[in-house]
Amino acid sequence: MLNEVVYCPRLFFYEWVEGVFVHNADTVEGALRHEKLERKEDPLPTAAEAETGESIRARSVELASDRLGIIARIDLVEGEGGTLSPVDYKKGAPRQGDDGSPEAWPADRVQVGAQALILRDNGYACDEAVLYYSATRQRVRVALDAALVDEITAAIATARALAAGGRIPPPLVDSPKCPRCSLVTICLPDETRAAATLPAEPDDAAQLALFATDEPPRAAAEADGDGLGEVRRLMPARDDLRPLYLTGHGLTVGKSGEVLQVREYGRAKGAPSKLIQEVRLNEISQINLFGNVQLTPAAVQGLCAAEKPVAYFSFGGWFYGLTQGLGLRNVFLRREQFRRADDPRFALRVARDLVASKIRNQRTLLQRNHVEPPPVALLRLKRLAQQAQAATALDELLGIEGTAARLYFEHFAGMLKVEDGDGGAPAFDFRTRNRRPPRDPVNALLSFAYALLSKDLMITCHGIGFDPFVGFYHQPRYGRPALALDLMEGFRPLVADSAVLTAINSRMVGDTDFIRAGDAVALTPAGRKGFIRAYEQRIDTLVTHPLFGYRVTYRRVFEIQARLLARFISGEILRYPGFETR
Image (cartoon, rainbow, N blue to C red; front, side, top):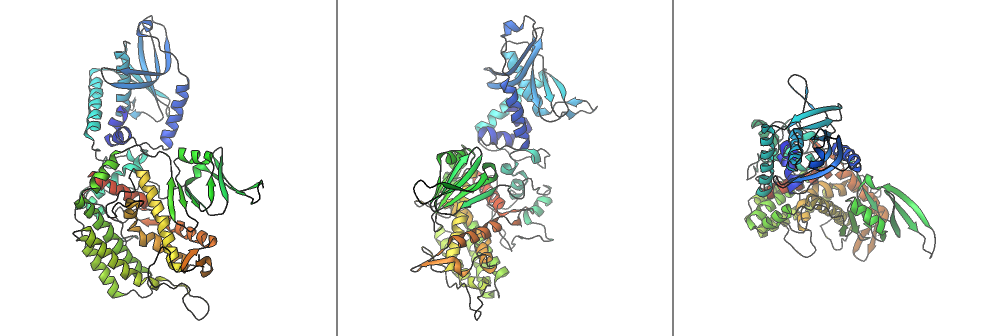
């Protein structure tokens, strides 16, 4: 705890106040080292017994100081002649002093000094502490003098003040510590600082760029102007883990060791099962089940323990459920979310940005994909986005969004560029948006795309600590994931609609991939697989974030935008910057 306070107060707040912890390579290696040490638990003699002068080496010792109110697990306590020293093992290398000699890092110094103070408070004689740095195999001694005691006391007071204050400290400025921090993808230090430079009210005249241009991103330019420097991409551009989709009939997912096994059982009673596929648990990010696919209890337990969400869809593609582990225990963000959602003015501010971003992205999609972009519709969409930004009530905003959607879908057919071979008649005819049930192939694809997108945003909400059922634009209604729907507004044209256009125009789905039942139209299993491939390609596409100027996948953008909304809710930034393209 004290190590984190000195290293980065924001890291301390995440780990010790909000209970957020994420492993990276460094923390995993450190945890494995300490696990080995903790297996060698040796008894520590009492203070009176230690004064006999015998040599002492006690591993994995847990002691507390009632005076300081702190607890420590000490890797090793060693000493002889009645004087003991705590020894703490570190993975890295020591700091180089001015004369080139190894020195303890400030955070390590306070941590091991606190262990020495705890030994003192338990009656042991202790004048120094030792740090062992594994990278260079060097021991660094730290004297327990008055200056160090003052540092430790100050660090304890700072930790208590931060915990009691309940406000997360600002991120470090251009710190070399950030790239190796395990929580950097949650903290988003540079992004938070850049977003904090945005004004409370948006500059409606400028629209952000999705693709690389010579023009610097708006916030990045402002950040440079304020001396904040370039926004560093401190997260991987794309996730190495992949979602697993299972769309077959009568499949069962079991677990053997750390491997998921997908089996198909014969229809006859007692018929042997056939192994269809094996997937390593640590290679998937989520699992999506369509129709009659079963999970064994061992598979459910393994997926929950590994925090891999399981999404359930009807055979027709209706998203109706989610199973996941306990997830985040942090309730502070949810408490703020509930409080802010009850504030009509705050909800309207969020809703205006969400709807304006959606309308601008619809306009952009028409500009980029329509065979002959309709100038009147584009102009009206531009004005509707401006009206959305100035709306004074949610009802007014709903009307603006509905008008924009009608205009957009009136011209949606102009973006479909596939024709059949007989006479050039359109193979996919689209007149207007309809659903429940969709009554033509294009609407069937749109409905399925929105179901997949809402599932991904719902998983994102859970991962960050939001309650996906309490939104700002979409008001609470039984069974409606209002916040997930809020977040997906701006991504509907960019991800869902774009995936539909790609699937149709590149013939990833054809007119034979649909079945009709009365007026309803649904995808066949082959058509569903084809569209899932198009959807996954779309969200795995690298895009330049218009605000920060670096390239990440849409799946990363989902998380970044949700975290920016969390920053706005907690008051770290002045407004929620929607994800817009031009």
